[in-house]
Image 1: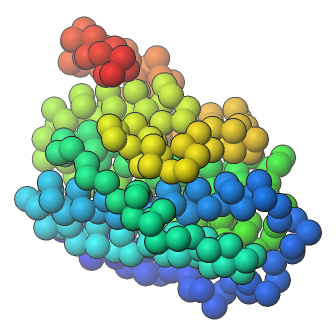
Image 2: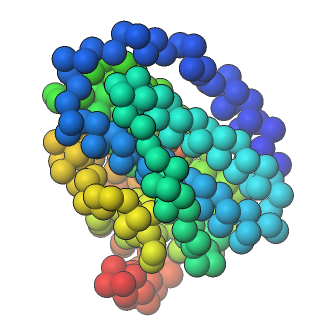
Length: 278
Ligand SMILES: [Fe+2]
Ligand SMILES: [Fe+2]
């Protein structure tokens, strides 16, 4: 059972709304463009609701994971709420219909690929929010100017990195139980790394992003704040995690592809190519 220790880890780091002083918002650093982007980040966070439904529906065989998801969903709900509070404080409301639109139904999810996709997704969100807040390694050049929002995004980035750690704990357990799952974890890891904007909210059919008023908002936002150096740091961190699972040195995407071919045969790379085309 992983849930008891993961819960403690999350509980120890838990922040509350009282630590954020919305009266300190610097209005001179807020414009329509920033409001548009933060409204979209908030709606994207609401996308954790359909993901939670999917986890609860498709992974009922794993009560340990289900118990973790109940806390994960709580923390993600906090993320959309804290951004909504910031938007309210600058005079912007999100209407309920816009939130409800995000609540789509996902296809049945394959266990190990979904876990891997979420592990990568949380790493990437940590990177993105960390860059928006100016705390991600190698991403200090161009943070968002409004200080209260920066504080919120820093808290969110740290939560997302912790979530990645929790998903990794479940991946580790999966490999210990079934070593062959290394193949699908490796293929999904490589596929996710090969597209710099890939995230669970934009790669499914239908996707969360497609439900938003401006589905393309995130790429320019990421381009503005996230540097190639910080992307490399995230990639290194992800490959280090795979190395721990594989118990072989894996430093680059090429190393991972080579490992998959050596361990699971050429088919592994072919299937990856198919996955990329879909
Ligand atoms: Fe979140
Ligand atoms: Fe998260």
